[in-house]
Length: 471
Image (cartoon, rainbow, N blue to C red):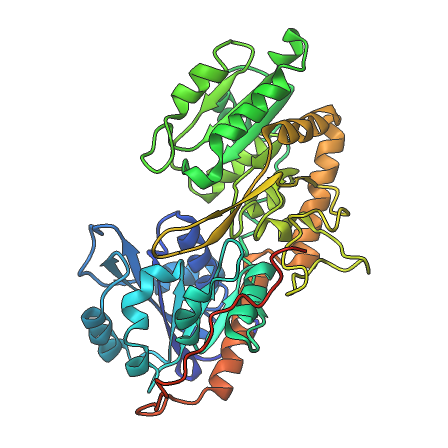
């Protein structure tokens, strides 16, 4: 990694207070937070308010500077961690702002976790800008998020869809595209004779050899459509002769039972109660290097989630093909091309490719187009589409991947890795450069909020969807 890019001496660096998960843990949000910190520590000083539910280290302060130096080859980074319960509260934030005196605050994760912060944004933004690496899973454009987006001085959308949503909701320029990036020196293809890989694969697959191994790696929650994915795998297996079926396996890296999902063991008992299906559960918590071993132990990742902000980058970087529902940010990783041969960028006219407007995509991608769209909602999020695909269509794509030779699968996966690293920039290093450029622009142009604001309460702004619902 290039720690010399945009280097500044410590006393010339701006200090950013990052409020997200504790960057020492291995949640998806924490991994992104860590990648941003370590790839920008030569240019910014960082303070992480590291959240967790009932954090066991809450109230402590850790200096992660030396560990950061060792990881990226610096000698003068400044990375401080304050473990906190959940993501904090106004009084704690005021206290830590007074202690650390940051030049900016940066948020990562769903805006509902920061309602308490947005409620005091006028107080904060009189002296400190608020930046938000934001994401939204699906349309219609969430006008109910408008107050949250307006409370930020910098919006960095992690998907092309999120950038478009930011523009649609705000009605003005909000076009910073900063997709998630991971360490492509950790997530990478591994040779089959690697001793660590052989041992990991032996344990994972219980000493058995398979011709084809499919992977599901995500949470057991409703929108991930895990039961539909198991059903798709069943449909695929049922098309094979028994002896060939027995040489396939499906690895589910997820909780077997979860209150916001379902009892997956009961689903497997119903659908795949035969030795030919070879369903393998693993709910172990793996660090990034072992996650890379997991990807390299399998042939393809599948994700049929009905709305999804991102996903699949680890699989791409590891050199595996992907089977995915065409929705949300997953479209970015599939490399769809528009009528001009350009990487598809959503607009108000065509906000998504879930209608299969564009069919050309990267060789590494096996898209499953939704067969129906359901308008879901809850009081905090009154409306959002669920793009639901048919298990039968997913089974067809599993079969298409299966029919490829191992060499063809690997070739396509490697093309996906090349595209992700060299064109799309789904790496930690590129993500860090984009964050540096976005914040430098913010610091160069930001103006503090006025002490007060006059609002005409007699003028009511219509909340009207400003993009097509049929297209």
